[in-house]
Length: 119
Image (cartoon, rainbow, N blue to C red; front, side, top):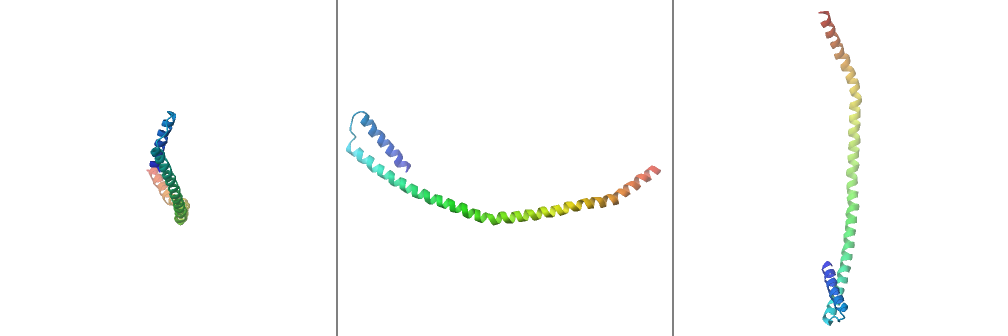
């Protein structure tokens, strides 16, 4: 399509230059311009048809891609929810673990400190 756009543009420019000088374009040039304008119209029609096919393909890929992606995202979100739940359970147990350690280790520290003071 670009080829014919450039070609027709050049032919039109030459014809306009001749007309601006008051000259008539040769019959062969006029025929050449007509042929190339027709080819440009055909190229444009083909281009539009192929562009429509491509747009349909892109739309289908986008839609189907989303449909294929949905189960993956859904499963990832379920996995993430479960992971966060497990972390929450561990975090809530940490307080009790710390209290237990404080009771066991804290009393040992006090008795060691007390024994040092007595010496």
